[in-house]
Image (cartoon, rainbow, N blue to C red; front, side):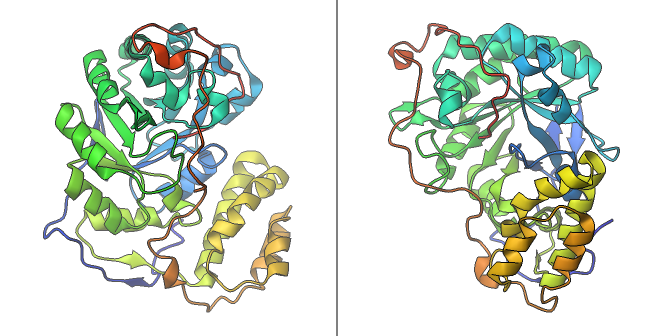
Length: 395
């Protein structure tokens, strides 16, 4: 079901004169459009991945799971490893700080879950992750990073599964890690590296540094995927033009706008369009999203999970506070249908929202919380602190 078929659109003119028409190559895998859905905790579950894939081709990555949780058989971790029947490529992001745990988790993913692609998270900036030396803090320890990458690649190799890395520029501007991370990734056989053009200190604030992405492209021979500030399809083309990246990773830009993947597929095929759905058409997409969540989680839980998406879908549209509040408490599909029927289906898309940030932004952090003495030596392995089974994040 393609809810966006026949939706209105506007033309826009990209900076380049010819379409990219390039596929995403990840080991033996090939994705027609060089676009990756960034893993986002509580967002990129099987239902949302299916919804986005109905809009256009791309690599749709499962929300991050912890290696320890998987190895130790944590029920919550295992419940996150659900794949839709329509998923042709099973892609999972894995987090960990212990090389042996990450390698063992990779073997489980490949052998027991039939995963086709493993992505390693070294980009999460949240304090509960960085204080244990994980996420965006870990690449500072070059030898530890190398051990994790080496053992993970070796664990995935018997299954023919490619391993990629997602990272940030560094901890802060005085402690940059992305060039070392790129070099080590290449040496260890990583298939591609995605760079979010912000430091951990920035979080999701400010502007992404696309120049850093271009620097990494020049620094390594493996494919580099760019991440940060892709709000419209035109931004993806500009990023690839300006940086030489082999692909783009889209996160917050698709929140409440899964049709962005339709626009991205069209843009990379040389079509100059941007989808502008009416509020009625957006409500159809909302209903489809909730329906998919209900199929995977059960109706009551699926509707509860859907609540967080309401504000993103309705951003900029006319919808009264009382109706928004009621939608944010929806507990059944029948109730959702009744509430969506109260929206003004003819309301035009709020074009003032085009190109604007979505999702969390916030302010730069005062400091990045790290293990004691973490910055004193880049080449020691650090005191391995076991990650919590329930740790979640993104990058």
